[in-house]
Amino acid sequence: MGSVHGTGKTDVQQQIGEKVTRLLAGAKLRLTRHRRDILRLLWEKHGPFSVQEILRWMGPDACDPVTVYRVLESFVRTRLARRCDFSDGIARYELAAGDGHHHHLVCTGCRRVEELDIKECPTQKLERSARARGYTKVDHSLEIFGLCPRCQTTAVAP
Amino acid sequence: MGSVHGTGKTDVQQQIGEKVTRLLAGAKLRLTRHRRDILRLLWEKHGPFSVQEILRWMGPDACDPVTVYRVLESFVRTRLARRCDFSDGIARYELAAGDGHHHHLVCTGCRRVEELDIKECPTQKLERSARARGYTKVDHSLEIFGLCPRCQTTAVAP
DNA sequence: ATTTCTGCAAACGCTTTGCACCGTG
DNA sequence: CACGGTGCAAAGCGTTTGCAGAAAT
Image 1 (cartoon, each protein chain N blue to C red):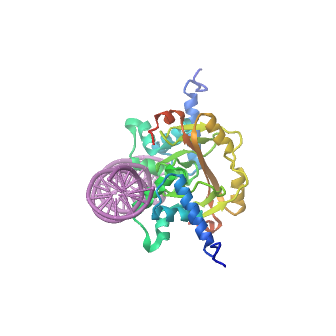
Image 2: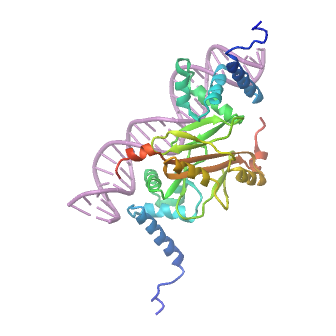
Image 3: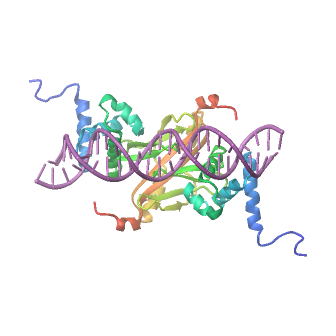
C-alpha cells in the first residue's frame, strides 16, 4: 500500500502545480514551461515583480527576456495578472486572480515595497461608477507612495 | 473712473498668473517662462498630460522636450505636481496642490481618460497607516481601468 | 498538421545626461 | 556676479517587433 493515495511531502507543490495548470487552462493559454514557472512565481511569492526580477529568480534556466515580456503580456491579456506602475518607468506584474487583494506602499527613495493589508478595498465605489458608465473589464491600480524612515535619514541635504 | 481699481476682463488671467507665480515662489523655484506656462496649463486644464501633449499644446513657441522633462521633474520634486501612470509606459503629470482631488477612468483600448468625481478620497486610511509606519511625504496614485463602450464594439474578434 | 510559443537580433520610443550658453535673482 | 535653467546632441534603457525554428494541441 502506501503508494495507493500517492500522498507525500510534495503534496503542496503538486497542488500548486495543478492550480497553475488549471489557471492556464481557464485562460485558454497553452501550458508551456515558462508560463508555468512564471505563473507559479507570481502565485507563490505574490509581490509584484519586474521582468528583471523574474529573470533573476529563474536563475540559470532563465528563458529569453523577450519571452518573459510575452508571457506577462499573455497573462495581462487574459486577466490572470495585472500590471503595477511605481512611477519609476519599470513595469511590475502581480497575480490578479484569486488571492487576497492587497495594495502597496512604495518608498520613493529606495523603491522598496511593503504590502498594505486592508479589509475592504476602497475602490469598489469607483469601479461601480465605471461600470455604470458602460465600461467592462474594470480593474484598478492603487499605490501609496512615501519616503521610508530609512531614507529620511539617508536623505541628501537639499 | 473705471481704471481706479484696475478691474477688467483680464482679471481672471491675472489672478491665475499671480497664483502660478505664488506656487513657484512657494516651491522655491525660479520663475521662468516655461515653468510658468507649463504650470499654468496644469492649473487650467487639469487633466494629466504627457510630455508630448504639453509640447503640442505649447505650439510654435514650444521649448525643447528636454526642458519639459526637467520642468516636470522640478514640479514633482517640490510636490507641485504628481506623476500618473496609465500602464502604457508614458508618464503623465497633473497638479498635486490645491484643486479638488480627482481620479481617472482610463480606457484600456483607446487610452481616453475620464475624470471620476468623488466626495471623499478612499485612500485616507491607507495613507494614515503609511504615516503610522514612519513614512513621510505620503501620496497616492489611484486609477480605474476598463474598456469603454466605444471600444467594446470596435473590439477585434479574439 | 496546425497553431502558437520561443530565441535571437535589431529596432523603437520615452527619458536621461553632458556640455556650453543664457537668464534669473 | 553666482547659480541654475535651457537647448542641442547623444546616450541609456525598458520594451516591442520580425523572422525562423521548436513545441503544444
